[in-house]
Image 1 (cartoon, one colour):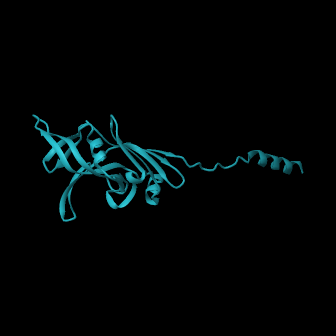
Image 2 (cartoon, one colour):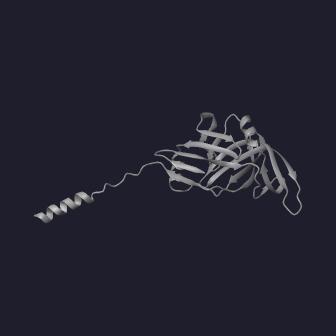
Image 3 (cartoon, helix red, strand yellow):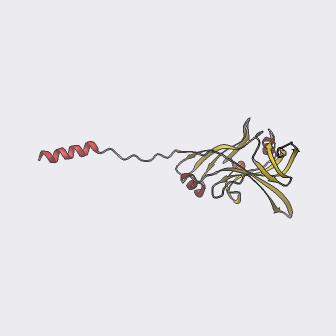
Length: 197
C-alpha cells in the first residue's frame, strides 16, 4: 500500500488482493481450506456492482470513499484488485500521519466456488464469482485474514466473508515542512560587530 500524505487528505493506492495466489489457511463455511481467487473474478464483481464503498475497519457507517462518486477507483489488472482513493476523513488522515494504517481488507458474499481435495494438504478452494460488498482500510483492528459472519439485512440472512491482505505500507509525506532559516551568517556578522567595539 502506498500512502501520500497531503495537507488535509491522503492518497492511497495498492492491491487489495492478489489473484491466483494461494492464501494462508482460512476457516470457511466449507471447513478449513487454502483459498485462491480466480483471475477475472474481481472484474466480474465490479461489473455487477452499482457502488462499492471503502470503509474504515469494516464499519459500514464509516465510508471513506466510494466508486459512485469517483473518490474510489477499483479495477482488476493482471496482478489483482487494485484500489486508488483520495480520503479526507480526519481520523484516517491522522492515522496515516501517525503510522497507524495496517492494510486492506474486503468483504464478499454470494460466493461461487469449487473445492479440490488434495493429498497431504488442505483442500484448495477456488473462488470463481462473488458479490464484492466493500473494501476497507484497516487502522484500529488487527487485520484478520479470514472470517465469516452472518448479517441480517432486510429480513434475509447473508453470509459475509472477510479477507485481509498482508501488505507493506509505504508512506510519503507530500506536505513540505518549513525549513528553519540558516542564520549563521547573520550571527557571525553580529558577533564581529560586537568584537569590533
